[in-house]
Image (tube, rainbow, N blue to C red; front, side, top):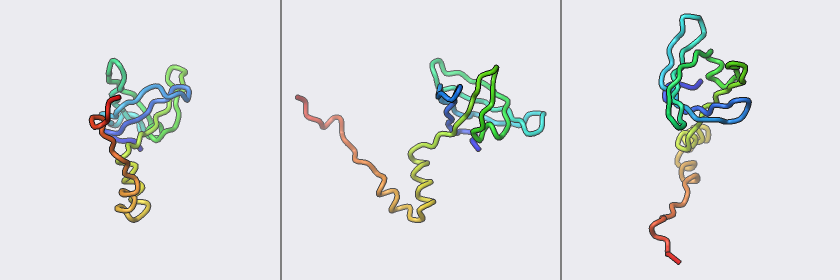
Length: 111
């Protein structure tokens, strides 16, 4: 389940539309429903509170005003490497194999 601090990609009608960060989650008075405070990472940046079920935070689609919406948790590169390391059993081997080459933009020759 997506949690506080996680980044999510918001899909509308199966088209990715924007990113958001989950700022806070608290229980609603209705059982199995939650208030989810999202910081929408778009221009202008804004905050919204949606009332969602836990399954919706897990990626199940729902509708809002007749529009199909889905949240997908985003895994950053460092989190992805940590997941690979934990599944492979040898974190040093995975981390070394996944590091890229650093190319300096300032050291390039000008034509």
